[in-house]
Amino acid sequence: MCQTLNHNSGKCGVAIDTGTSLIAGPTNYINQILRILKLKDDCSNYDSMPDITITLGGKDYVMKPEDYIIK
Image 1 (cartoon, rainbow, N blue to C red):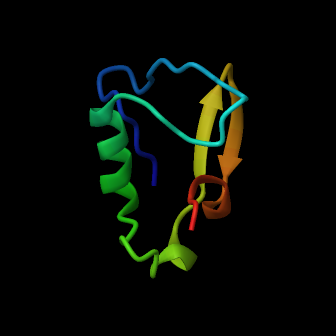
Image 2: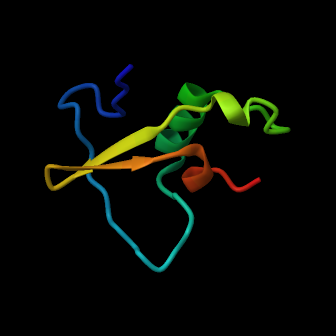
């Protein structure tokens, strides 16, 4: 399943900060990501969370749940 946040172009702009371990962004985008992921507040569905692929500069970076969820 492919989900994009910008339905017009299929792309969105980002800034990379390698000094942080958090994913941050405008509230409306982060809320869209949370709705797509459907992570439960108690993390009880952690084991069924999908990998997330982010493409930057034509290169795919795959994040596993342990990369994007702090338990």
